Length: 166
Image 1 (cartoon, rainbow, N blue to C red):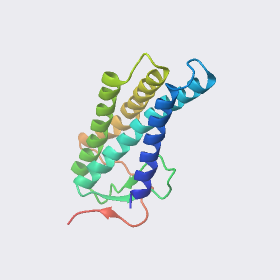
Image 2: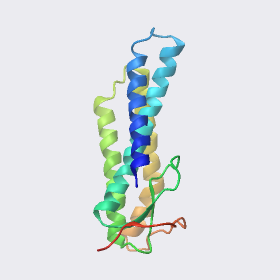
Image 3: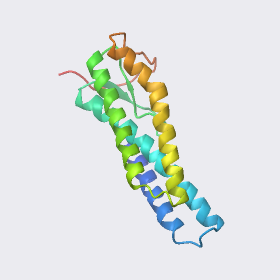
């Protein structure tokens, strides 16, 4: 069901690793080195975003939430969450799993991303921008649900469901 997304995201990961490796094998300062380095940095940030989305999916799966896989391979989201069928607790845990994935990639990027390379600087800044967007966009929704208000409805829930209560 999510195999095509896994293939997509692993392909992005390997392309990023290949670009990073190749950027160190071409003439330093060349257009090729710069292009590969930029591609590797942007690719690493995209991988960080993908990890965040897989964190949400793992949280939804572990809480036996009802959700629908995204219909298109180029969707930035892996699934649509059915707020009407799931509990507030399921929503909160699904959200926390995405936040935890974000915290992991930011920590990993801060600890291990080589900042003496252009790719590392781009990757770290991209990851920090994405983490900031998570705080700006998702944290208020999470806090509304945490404080007992309704779980947000996306209006995109359609199709065969996955997961659910037993």
